[in-house]
Each structure stands twice: as C-alpha cells, then as structure tokens.
Image (tube, rainbow, N blue to C red; front, side, top):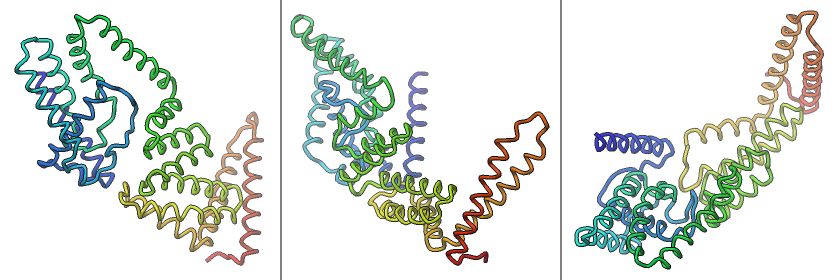
Length: 347
C-alpha cells in the first residue's frame, strides 16, 4: 500500500510540475529521454555533496537553474555522479553491516524523485535533501562510532551550520536576503528578493534587486517584467490622480522593459505578456482614447457616489461620500482642462 500510494504521489507531483512548466513556456525540459540519466547523475552528486558539506543552503543555486541542452551533456559532474552511484551500490552489496545498507538505501530512495527526470534543474534546491541527509548522518555515525573525538567534531560542525542558518527563517525578508548571501550570482535569488521588498513597500530596494538580477543575467525575463509592472502601476496611479502627462511619460518609460521581456531567450508567459504589450502600445499611440476612458470612469464614479449618498439616512455620516464626490469632480474638471489644452475631443 505504501509503494502504491508513494508512486501515486510521484505521479501527481510530476503532472503538477509538467502542467506548470508547459504554462511557463518550458515544455522542452519535461520530456523523458535517455539523456536525462546524465542529468540525474549530475543532480545526484550535487545533492550528495551538499548533504555532506552544506556550505550553501537556500532556494536558489547557480548550477543549471535555467534549462539548456548543454545540461544533458557529459562533463565532470556526470563522471563524479556516475562513480559515486556505482560506488554506493558496491558498498551496499559488499558491506555486511545493516546500518550501512540502510544508510545508502535511505539516501538513494528519498533523493530519487528529485533527480530531475522530468522537471530539470528547477528541482535542484537544498530543501529537497533534508530527508535524504538522515541516511548520510546514519552512515557518518556508524563510521565514527569508535572515534568519539572525530564524531564530536563532525557533529559540532553540523550543529554550528544549523545554528547559523536558523535565524534566516525568522521572517520572509531575512530568508530571501540569505538566499542572496549564499548565492550572490543567482539572478533568481535577486529577483525574488525584489518581490519581497515590493510586498514590504520598499519600492527602491525592489528596483535595485531587479536591476542587479538583470546585471547578473541580461537574458532573464522576470525582473524586466517586474520593473515594467512597477512603471505601469505608477502610471495608472498618476492617471487616477490627475497627472495625465506624467502617466503618459511613465507608460513610455515602461515600454522598453516590456519589450526586453518579450525578447529574452526564455519568455515564461508569452501570450499574457504580448497582450500587455498590445494594451500598452494602445495607450502610448492613442493617449486620447486612454483619457476618454478615464473621463468615463470619473463620470461613472460621480454617479455611483451620488446614488449612494441619496440612499443614506439622516443618522449616517455623509461627509466622506461628499468629499469623494467633490474630489471626483475636481479630477473631472482637471481632465477636461487638460484635454481641451491638448486639443483632445470625444470621438
């Protein structure tokens, strides 16, 4: 029953990742072929090395995070992975101790699903080696059981490493900062740190992180789109606040970042982002239409607020509604004046 349920979980996980990768325009990395064995052995040695020497711990790494056909070619990673795998199999069958057999079986069993058979390098992340590491810890304990000084030294190093990493889980910001500290050349780490800064309202820090991500990998599309989205939000806010010329200028600033997004080697959401490009170009090429839509929005806003005001009772505080109506009227008058001074008339 455990085997059946385990394989069903694997099937569901693979389907989920396949569907997500197809959605993100990365379908070419999900098909199983013989060369994926090369990738699996490279990933195997990566995880084995990190379980023994956890020098860097985090979500992001710089080895093959973005799919490329070169990752399916043999190199020294593959050679080490092959030798390590064959060596462990040999030890498993030749060593008489059940503890050693269990250690190897445990590590290989729990790491097997994460060897990038389907989802390629997106799955190489240190959190997936937590359970397999129990196997390596058991092996180290067995080997050093008669050498207590060596055992204490190794356990002490692992404890210190654990204590060093624990504070990075205190909050979201510190966690994503730690990923940058551990992987300073990871454009993905900087990109996601920028998103965290944005959620905290630190727009300047977010933009700095995204620009650093671009400097590391100029062909990574996500930070370009994030910068574009920030310009677009700023322009939308300026439009609603009556800064019409500022809105048009900011939309123009957003355009190159969106165009760079679409021209990157891998564009994760091409259909959605092409639609964003069409909408942006329409606003830039035809600002008159954009302003007319804003005029219609203000008219509807005043109408809705007036209806709401008329339905309020005598005991209700009508001042906030009246203030909103007056503010909408001021914006409408300002828009009318701007349109008239620029020769924009309803069409």
